[in-house]
Image 1 (spheres, helix red, strand yellow):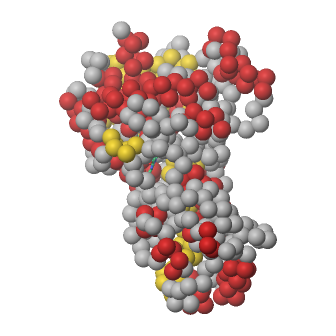
Image 2 (cartoon, rainbow, N blue to C red):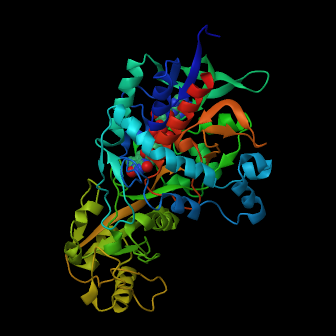
Image 3 (cartoon, rainbow, N blue to C red):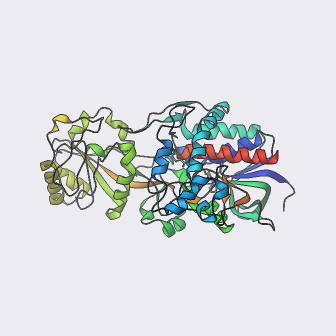
Length: 482
Ligand SMILES: Cc1cc2nc3c(=O)[nH]c(=O)nc-3n(C[C@H](O)[C@H](O)[C@H](O)COP(=O)(O)OP(=O)(O)OC[C@H]3O[C@@H](n4cnc5c(N)ncnc54)[C@H](O)[C@@H]3O)c2cc1C
């Protein structure tokens, strides 16, 4: 065992781990920061995101922040058990403390901490501006750090170095060290194939979900093999943090069988080659058939559900079919983030040949769709125009106009895994809760690793959650030390 005992060891150099580490170090405590990546690659998913934040201003979360979390808090919850959550911690039983739902008290704590967290990030050299997300229609307010997630990683890494944090790159955390009372006392790691131990009074696990671990994905997630991580940062997140905490007795939160799904062009190797243009055309599978309502609502609120339907199709892929009418959609290129060109043809017959989709099936699908489209006079691409198909088994609810004017364009579309939903359950301070409803002494979790989402992602909250939980856990460690 090495001689040095750190006040805290933090695993992960994304927004969550860096925020926790700098918060602890700026109070004068000693910190070891561990990441499996090299210095230029460290930063996980945070390095590759534009980092949209569900905020109204630097001070306040969006108006719908808490409401959206409450709307996706879990399923078929026993009201008698959930009712205990209204009474505060002292009157809760172990069953309600460990219930697999989003705890409303924790969400309120995050909402209250969001503004102060962004203000603190400003003091660390991060600037924020109104976001320009790649959505042609939007349903909420968003800010973003200038320079995206990479700017967060760079600014906070510089602060970590200023505070003389010991950074251990190319080091994997593989297990927790527990003392004889079950208190967390450090980490077992591996570096260059050799085992090492880091002794620390407190440990913060901020090492992401398991989107980079095919073995765990195949255990929990149906058809996960068709959904690659959306950017290279995700490959570093292999779920060890979740597994080591479970071995130490942690309880869970979030849907282990789901992940945040985003539609991408599978041909592209750039980070997040997203395609959000499908509401203005149709989606067909390899059999040439439509399979989902392409426009049930504003695209930022509905793309995840549609992408899950893409994943269910043969080979986990489909095609977006557009005609020349897409040019009527102002700024439509905003919704096309791939670096790969559209596949273009003058006729639908030629397009079917290029896509290797059965020609007769594609033409029949388009004919049936066209016959069900309403009068296009009310087409209004930037609002929900209610131009809905009639008498189709698979309807389209908005922006339904005939596909008939060439040139026709197509993009292949597949489902990417942005991050996994299942993870650890924490209290308002970020302490990990065990299966008996108590906190595990010395153990905190922050960021993606904290399982939060059920059924659907509450958009633009993952980076925010990472920063908030980094601050909350770091501040709690500082307060405990004092
Ligand atoms: C392209 C893209 C776009 C996105 N867009 C948005 C958005 O607009 N808004 C939003 O809120 N969210 C968005 N997300 C999601 C968001 O970026 C992440 O969920 C969030 O940044 C995760 O932060 P984190 O600190 O928890 O984990 P990460 O940033 O993933 O960092 C985890 C770190 O832990 C390290 N690590 C993992 N396992 C170990 C181990 N065993 N030992 C040592 N180190 C380990 C990794 O190397 C990595 O550096 C997006 C993600 C991507 C990839």
